[in-house]
Length: 166
Image 1 (cartoon, rainbow, N blue to C red):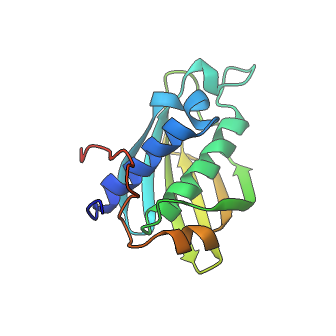
Image 2: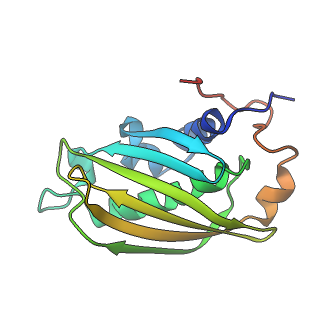
């Protein structure tokens, strides 16, 4: 059995799995997204905005933010010790200020508000490079199979690629 990991390394390992196994995240976010901090129930991350993340007005596309609500909610669930993070049942985004333009950085904080045997509820906030609240979202996930599959919290499955500690 692989060793128990600290939350930051565990969440970065889950992100690494998303980038290796998913269809959307590596194409949309690629190497431009980073987890900067993770503790139990909370993950902080940032995205360097590139042209692929923008709309025809050359500003951050709302779909990019919606995708980061989805991923951020999943990483918040991972920060509770689950490697598999369930499936989405509900996702909501409210756009409040411009997220930025190419060359800017947007930061996100994702919190797992509650996790039970069936559902996990998460909330995500985004700040633009001016420090303004750019968007907020919520993401509900069905986690029954993920909870059953996790033998021990913060222990990745056999064969999982482990992220560096730094």
